Length: 261
Image 1: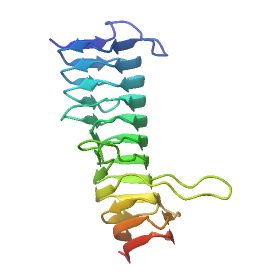
Image 2 (image 1 turned 120 degrees about the horizontal axis):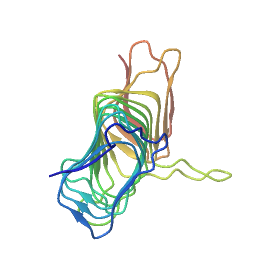
Image 3 (image 1 turned 30 degrees about the vertical axis):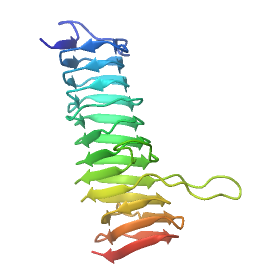
């Protein structure tokens, strides 16, 4: 039998979520967990061998995972999560993390490889993991930042594979230079670009290698800015400016090609 978290029948839930679910370090849950209500926090520090699902028109403020959810996580249509933080050795098993709802901020700094699939809306996705990760975007992500630097051990090369058919507003790889005068940009692990959607706002590559062809589709009345910063900044693919779009380009590194659709 699964564990179900839901509001009691014929009751009015509080306007501000107050319920907290915690599976502590060293603890193990052998069932799936079904969340059908609003929560303040959902925290997993141990092991959940089943699936964790969030469904209904509800809100969870924070989801923290530093453990293992073997059956993955599913966020259903209509469900909203304020912040997802996957850190430490947090992992979602072979099923991965699938979002069909709305997530405000998704932060991944885990040292374990994970797969993430978005069919809903993610406003901000931040990846600073030292492991190889795959993000498949089939709908809309406001911004993606990839700053993961290669770690040690098998599979820890900090490569981000970006796949799917959805659009992203801004995509940033590496870290921009700081200081006065500014120093050099800091690179990140490679990006493998398998996404057939478009960048609609800005593409910034700070001393990182991006492999793959990238579409540029500006919003109406706007322009897509492309910044390839640093001598070691490489885009090993073709940038394609789509019909009725405008783009600006600043290049200090290498770009394999640029074309108009």
